[in-house]
Image 1 (cartoon, rainbow, N blue to C red):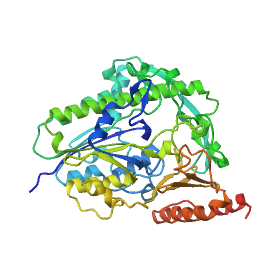
Image 2: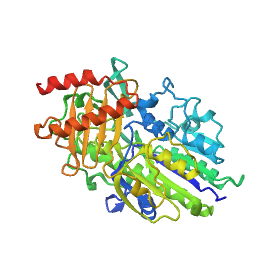
Image 3: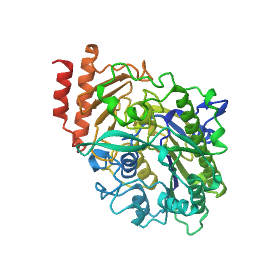
Image 4: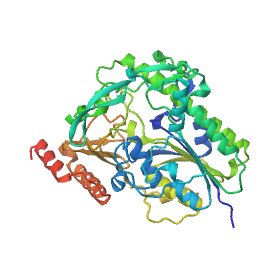
Length: 470
């Protein structure tokens, strides 16, 4: 019987797709991820199921779209936790030694820590440790409050704002370096001959943007090349976009302030990349690299001032398009330009372990012929339903050349992703695009309804008719 291959799955938080192979201030932002991409397969058009932490992570871990599980917002109280197997569970059932290190924002019942994995270390242990050491992870000045719909009411909700600061404690005490030590401990373990699966979920580059040296000074703000649409909303943007949290968090921020945000953000991206490099080095030292599939991705991206927005929670490429790299032993390296989704990772992991789970959506991305299995006319979907409870609605579908977004106020967005890469010209009310809008709206509506959507499409569609004067 052929020995099963190991799995190392690494995820960052808030990392934009365009940081891979990015150069800033005369240096590579992600040299280790670049090398991983050169040895593996870089999926250039990968998308998250939701531009928000908990729904995105739960969808990836379970292989089930957010509206289908009901985990559609950051449910810190486990009101919506789903009884479903995760990748971790399936691999454990298949005879793997399973470890999880880092952020565990996956809402399942029972919780991740109570599922009997061989090794489990989360942010909770680190936060308890940091408190004992007197480390302040978030200060009042880091928080900005915005008016946001939550469970039928307009509430004041706090988010990490644009404030940047320096981590003035030893680098090895920074959260992600503590995660690194724990991951290395798992990799170094010689407990038994079972194949292993290690999930390392890093915090960086999530705000608040508190950065340790040498990463804090790595990118001089004045030398950073930022996108042209920093601080500029899209033309014909739906009115409801300015009421969203992402737009409110960017109000009053100058271009010079955005430069400092980018400098700190890129510092954290390079920090995460350094940890990835050290993990890959430790894997190599263990002698297990040749038998290990390595997957890298992020839960979602960040606007970073584009469209005059900050953080995630919208459907622009900067938010829902994500980095994804798979290095599979024996497979030639390359780049794939076809659309893939977070939902493809569950069938990929099942394929790795020889698990037959046909009920999961998506396509396995393993094997030399995997690119041929991805339809060229494929569509992928993403949803946003509020952050701290049911709130502002966004539903999106992405095809090879277009993106369509529909919201609770009947607002429509259509972007030509080939001609308008920065998504600055909304064609959602353009009569010349009426047929395309109709077709993509129907595609989006049908998919979400088939996946348990609670959103009242008819009510929003009537609002859309009133907005267009029909």
